[in-house]
Length: 194
Image (tube, rainbow, N blue to C red; front, side, top):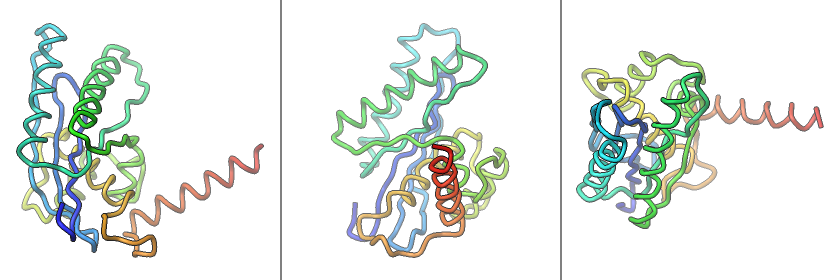
């Protein structure tokens, strides 16, 4: 990390497609694309081989790009328990590799990530892709959606945690402000129900 930016590796965990995206975020909270890609494995391969491919891809990104932090999409319940298991396993590999590299790691929910980049926690994939292209000043939205999601996770983490040089009083983006307001309302509601 330089004194003016934070480099975050965002990971959208999965076995068939694991999105990885790396961004530099400066003290003005502007993001710059460093790397984006998708680690792929065959659904027909044994689980151990698939996890080894995911690990090798993440390890390479860590070694080549040297991020300051790792952010992983938090696994959430779905109707397809097989998909949830694979996602959780890939997430565990990512968090383990971050720990082995001595990097701080965090997880963020899909709605938290969507709210951070679009201002709306229920945004669809196309909205996220379009906003990522706009935020990172890309000519076209990152493809596939797993790649855009990984970049969104990285940006969410950088914005929510702040850069190393930012202070708590730094201005929030409109999306961050909307998310912070929603969190305040939710906390107030929970307290009033207790």
